[in-house]
Length: 288
Image (cartoon, rainbow, N blue to C red; front, side, top):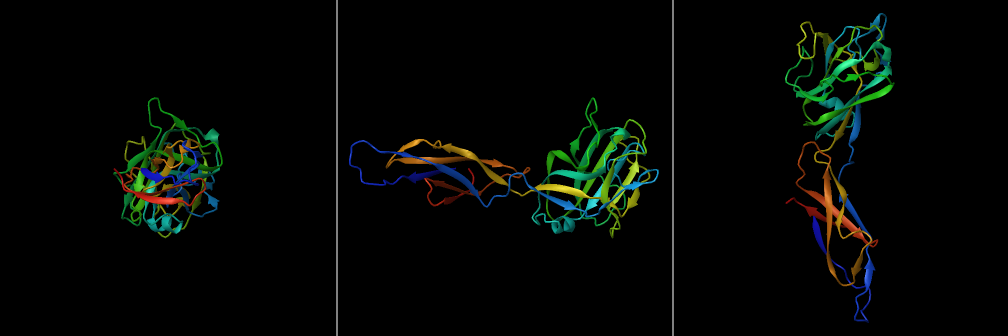
């Protein structure tokens, strides 16, 4: 955006030469959301899925059954109650809260996260048609090992746009290098009033499970969501901050806008500037 600004003289000119004025320019974006997005946690349980003879399921990082596929249903109402915008936004990552890493249990090979939207309010089996947004399933396969306590974040390769109305399904899947009874434990919420999880062992993530098991327990999940759209000012392109401007001259003010949304196109924004400590000025930008 470029705005034409008239630089009025501070005093009558008494000489033929033009007076130089030091320009201190500050750019701003009005009414934009925080660039990196906000985090919202669904699930407040303080117990873990640790159990005798191994970890209890659902367990996104456990491998005592070998390769396992999970799906978790999160209702839109739960996300909104956690503070997420009812207008939806772009989901950039999900995290699970690790209580005990148990890194010696072995690596989770080709760990993937997929996501989708649904009108279903409870799971009755596995849901197809999800979008893979986090994948380590490459050749050669990269391994993931939960080797630290606390929130373990999986940054999406592709941001997912949530409409703010539909319920969300998160799927995790992985292969393993073997079986273990000491898989990583996570914090979970039990006794939910609906089937919030489904899981089953599988020979590979590409193979559909044949004996799905339903549960009213679900690991606590944290989402990072950016608004739609989510614009921010990268910087000013003209004039250069600190440059000298002829008193009485006309010059252009230009700024570069960044887009933190995914993958929403920004078509308008309220932009502003101030200079030399003056009152901020705003103007609407409506695209090109």
